[in-house]
Image 1: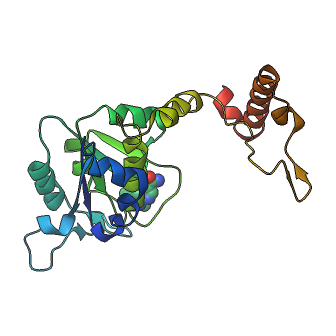
Image 2: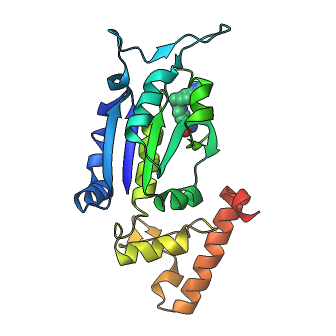
Image 3: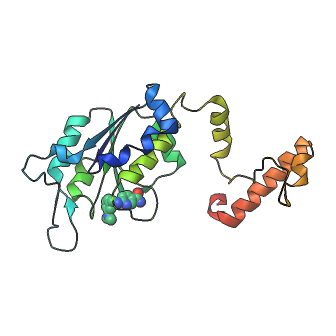
Length: 222
Ligand code: 4G0
């Protein structure tokens, strides 16, 4: 898969995507990632990317010209162009799976008060939000999406990790997990997990997962 990112803060992408699983995917050629500075698609002396809203009001908007030019340069027939903004549809594991099946993503990170509406209407195939909060720009949301999508690409996770992912990315929260020691400062691991009775263990885990989901995320059960 190819992912292009268009951002005013390309340096933000250096750390997170050069680590761990995403880096492994890049080295193996499963993911080709390129980060582009929106200012490189301006033509004026001041490299202007934003302007004041017609009709007045606070804040600045990303102007259409540089973003249209960038998409015309970077995009093709098979490109899925995605805006990151708090007004997007809420990103979740199902959307991550959907994006992992695409050949080419072009992620456009907003800043300021957002995008000139013509970008949304004429350029974007989709607009995504990573949750109901505002951050200073779309770089962190883009990195979250890149990470979530990359780990779903074929061959990125090992077989064990992949099958775990299958069984856990469904409806319930996870049951409690414990590792050694069985007694840490008097805090004990539940007896059933030490019993060797695999049927009882499976039953306990199912009950715990259900209980935890009811308490913390009842919306997942509806
Ligand atoms: C567009 C995404 C981009 C509009 C981006 C802000 C949160 C998310 C930005 C705005 C972002 C998210 C209207 C404030 C940049 N913050 N939840 N900030 N407005 O995915």
